[in-house]
Length: 90
Image (cartoon, rainbow, N blue to C red; front, side):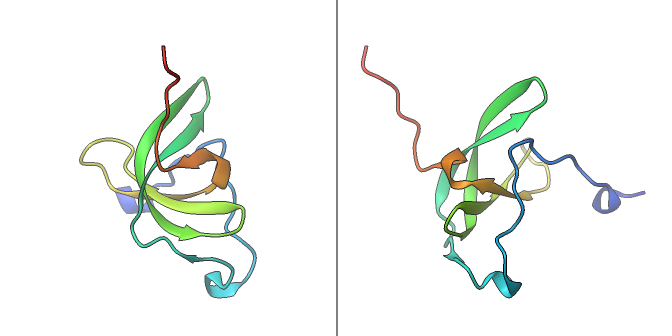
C-alpha cells in the first residue's frame, strides 16, 4: 500500500461538504491564508491553511499535517476558520 492509498484520520471537528452537486452552494476561496482549529483525540491544534472553498456554514481548507508532508483538504465549520488569532491586552 502506498501513501496515496492510505486513509488518514480526519480531525474530530471535520464536517461533510455542503449539499449540492459541483459545489454549487458557495464560492471559491481564492487562496486566502487563514488559521484553522483542528480537534484531535486528546489535543487541539491551530495551524496555517489556505481556503479552497466557502459555503454558508462551512469552509474547505488545505493544510499540511507536518512540514514537507502532502497537503490535506478538510471541510470545517466556519467558526473554526479565522483570518487571524487575537490575544487580549495585558
